[in-house]
Length: 309
Length: 248
Image 1 (spheres, each protein chain N blue to C red):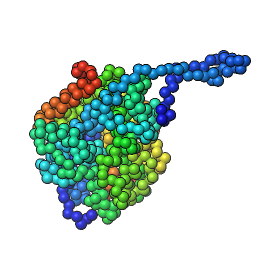
Image 2: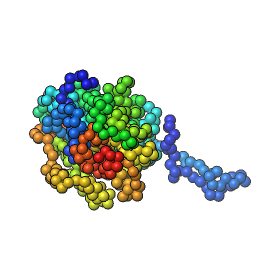
Image 3: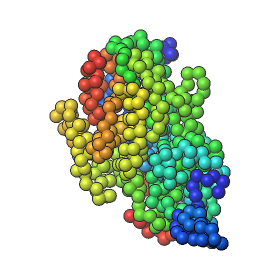
């Protein structure tokens, strides 16, 4: 991959990365800088619709996401937009799929874009990728090995991908294509990258189980139960760390780990760290620059003990 | 019913005699159990079309009752009463009274999309769950669920400014549902959140919740979305044959 000409990659952080997931934003940017990958933020972006707007009307969600894609394509001439948040990534992919396949969505998107005064997005103008795709394509596992500064050796990691990165399958046509493509059934990009960084990856059966993020506050008891499943399984696999690649999953795990402790007196051990933070440490970036101290789940004592922070 | 993981036999219709002797044979207790017969005559065959008219429910007619959705379901693994296949079946045959027995839990779908991933007929069961929950509220069978309140607070902020600010959402949702913000677990979380943070960072965060993030030049998009939502609501009310007033 190192031979291909690098285009600037559009960066769509989304609302969560400017709020509770500030450390994911920070570590993603720090990683890009360290690896010499240019990110250019999509100008004046808006919310993709998250998990809520579709419950009012899925076509409205597609419009919101399409506005982001339209700015990237028509105002900035970008060919690729990278979204580190699973919700944003999923919604941009969903909008892409619906605009390519559903005439009713196209009609709504065109009508609303005209009224709002911007060019309507049309299918295939931009490719949406996740932060995992970005690192995997631009640097790859070999690239991580070459740049390794502080191996994660001895750190046992359970990789948690959540729901929106792989489901439903049809909005991710590039996945499940065999070879090195990502799998929707058993995703492996994070496993590969963190293994290249020296970590011991445990065989985690709940990689794509749900954390209840959609109802984290509206139905807290179900979310706490689902998060406890994730934590218990990781602990049973011997994992010290659950690596995440989604701000909703990450904050859901952090919140409900505390809620399980406080409300149900169920204490669990694994600490929760963004994969960008773990990769950053392995490449020799300082913990502060990766925002590790901003996480609610306190991984610093463990990382210090292992000589990683 | 093609799949028997959910019974249509109502517990209150089971009859057991404590002391019963039939032709000199003691058949007391469960030997004497019988099911009181009932004839269902209150079908509401309009439900399927009404659900199909709400966003997400469009493809309910494709279902062939294989049960893959329920088998894959995250919430079903926690609560066996939560059964998407069963509810799709009830809607399709118009058994409204049976559907209403589960009306308080249908909104609990967590949108993990495992059902939609597993469905061989592209029914989009996740969307169908949302449309059934929405239908129950529009018809006045249930109060607005906590999830519906959350969606409205969240979407309201997106529609108004183009972006959300999480602190504002949490405060808005707790106020609307009458919950105290000072819950022990939230306080513990807040304390841990600031544990390693320098004062400057806390100041920036506090500022973020005062200065609401906005998308510049959002006015025309806001107006367009407002019109779209109003048209959408009018269409839904018409399809369900209910008066156009907004419930809140």
